[in-house]
Length: 280
Ligand code: PAF
Image (tube, rainbow, N blue to C red; front, side, top):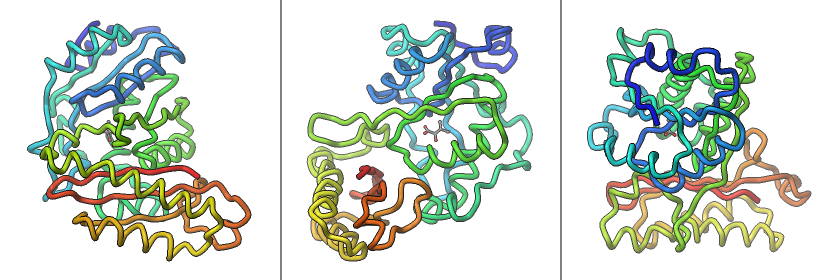
């Protein structure tokens, strides 16, 4: 695997390649990321991964400074798996040589809700860096995890509206054996919090069971899931039932008629904020 730190080196490596498959990450790689790399390998050649902790998508009081940075360890993991041909690991001045005053701003009805509401500017930061990374790598395919469900929708919408020649593929969320979605932020959980963390997914499964059993009152479904988590000490930002196609709230008739739905949640255990989702 070639590890490159500058855009010039990256372009040298990729010159003439029209079928590159790309996996952007912020590092501290876990088996969920490695699954994205494997999927990329099935859909393009060469596989390019990036590791860049993007300051632009962190709010002023968020965990940018303590976000785990484990480049050497990540390189070893990627070398063992042998799926990635080029790893692009730029530093901040390579990605942002001047203040990033041009930004992508996703539409409010997609980028301003849920994560975008609780993390203002988050999707501007994500879209802007993803566009820049696409411009550096020029992939034909890029792979994103479904764990960041709204991010996946924002990126898809950006590619559609800007007619970017990149096909976006989604990989199912990879979970630990107890159901907890793999995330770099799980590293922040204390042993006690780690033991509690699978409740987030279990709560979504219970809510899904209610919908499947015929419950159609959205507010009640969301309310009982929120209450169940709050009672156990979680600080819940949201548990919502939304339409898969646009993340708008479904009507009772749509729930009844089997509209494809998704439960989405974000909640804090101590100081660690976890997100998860479950399609119905
Ligand atoms: O999902 C992530 O790790 C990040 O949001 C991404 C897509 C790499 C952009 O910084």
